[in-house]
Image (cartoon, helix red, strand yellow):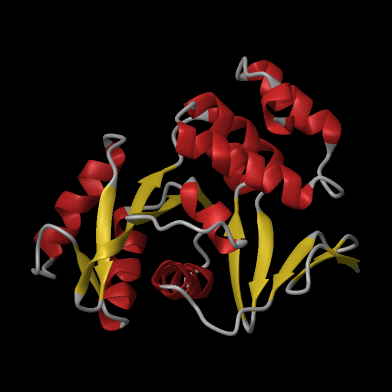
Length: 210
């Protein structure tokens, strides 16, 4: 077991990061609640984007938690929505929970669009979900890392890909997220994979050291 911080450890054998949190943020709560249902329904997924840095302690807020899920059938999506509704999720732009509303959401996913779910009474933060459509989306799921947060489990995009993609996005916030993850996990990152993703995305690895 490799100790990253007082509250974060890395199990190198099983490739699992363990995070202990005395208090969950709203982003944590919604991410864990959504992941719990995906795990129970055996839907493969990965969390990407800004929440990954927040999960490990980056001090900022986010309006959403981004999920990429495998392409599933309408029937399986309807079953997933039923479980989500029972757990307190609803579509952001509709309070309706009818089959027609579910079908419309599914067709949006099929077209490559994103859909959003709110949790409880609050519109923000919410879940933004999309089907895996690109090569990077699919790799994010296939090579996802398991994270233990207290007694719960969620899965994130590989750190090396996450860092490189944040550099690719290029905003100040995204670059700072990339630097945060790089400095925190520098001792356990696969340098070759990180360099590969930086080359493929045409970003400068040296930006992480500044």
